[in-house]
Amino acid sequence: MIDKSLSNHAATFNGVAIYSGYSFESLVAISKEDISKFAMLLQDENPLHHDEIYANASRFGGIIASGPHIMSLFTSMVASHFSKLCPMVGTHFEFDFLLPVRSGDSLTMCWTISALDLSKLYKIPIKLNGTVGSSRGVVIKGMGEILLFPSNNS
Image 1 (cartoon, helix red, strand yellow):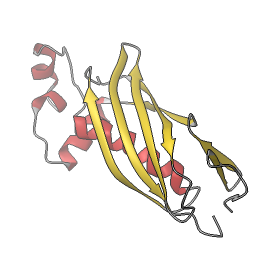
Image 2 (image 1 turned 135 degrees about the vertical axis):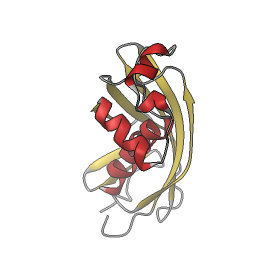
Image 3 (image 1 turned 90 degrees about the vertical axis):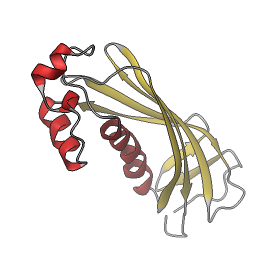
Image 4 (image 1 turned 30 degrees about the horizontal axis):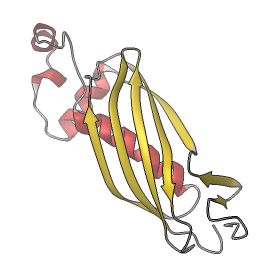
């Protein structure tokens, strides 16, 4: 249940308080097999995602993940996280790709609420900023916008 007694700066859903500055993260290991499988599902035939000999000879020095692969993991963690609190939808996401994601990378994906509007408790717009990091540094910066649809039962 949403706690409507809170100020305009925070709300509680099922015992979880959300507010500007609230963050959550996920750790994800990226394998060569996952990269190839995801690219094939998208019909992405770029040899950088499948052909080790080709990828090793490239400027990347090995197999790299496709952009949609990492974006999917990054955005789905938002849906997975907030849908446990109440119904929600994503409305807008943007990404800057700073470094390639290589097979064998362990990624730390983190989203932080930068703004939320609690003026209408039946539809709560939230803005997020996020990063995906590896041992080599930040590989992706992102921003997103979602809508929460709390009910009296959320």
